[in-house]
Amino acid sequence: MKVAGCMMVFRELYDPKKGSMQVAAFMSGTGSNLAMLLDTERFLRLQGKKPSYHISLIFTDNPKSNAQAIADKYNSGYIGEPIPVITSDIREFYRYRGEKLSNMQVRVEYDAKTLELLVSYSIDLIAFAGYMPIATSTLIRNHLIVNVHPADLTILDDQGHRKYVGKGHDVVKMALLDGQRYLKSTTHIVDEKVDHGALLMLSRPVKVYYPDDWEKRKDDDVYVDRIADANQKVLKEEGDLVIFPQTITDISQGRYSIDEYGHAYYDGRAIAQGRQIGGRE
Image (cartoon, rainbow, N blue to C red; front, side):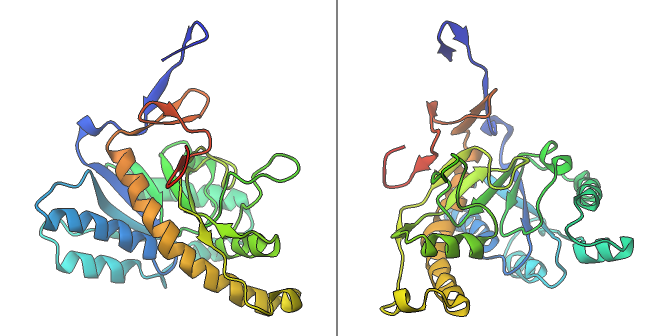
């Protein structure tokens, strides 16, 4: 691609000529996003089609997550190599070292251990399917990682920074308290700043539900938490679970590229604000 008399270098996030993209799904809790990725893959197989990606590994930091249950359910009806599950208890990792979970130097050590656990697998992409630990450069610089986030990351604050970054429940709550009329989910590349990487896809807008007594009770934190949870459940169904498998599929088909400055492209077109489902890109 030529820009202003110079040659811009950009590359596909994945080259489909390599075959089916091998995905490691990272999760911490219920795994609904992972289940949708698996269901999308399975649906194509049932149609006699070859999926462009394959969930070849499930990784969880939480031994109480649904990782093994999801793998068992999928493996029971799948003809082929069973999907392995790696459980690396992050709380035990910190407890053994006598440190709090907020210690990011220990997180670097944890991510280094994670890399060692992945080394025997040929992983093309890591999908953060509800993975809660903040990833460090140790992991990020060694793997392409894609995350789905329950907020519109195109919205900026007064300083020009992305406004709704952080934990999922927290950002939905922030949006409600700001009076947002609609919510969106966003997929993005993971980089070394939380929820900061190149935007890939945004969901259709999902209308916010405000109860009739919202204005009278929005100072009640417990009440607001309950309303935020209700809205996040709808956003997951209409946002996360739609755009996450679509983003992974599009990457596996070679439709996304990135240039030397970290800017994303879809089918060769710049998408600074991500690919907007049902709207302008």
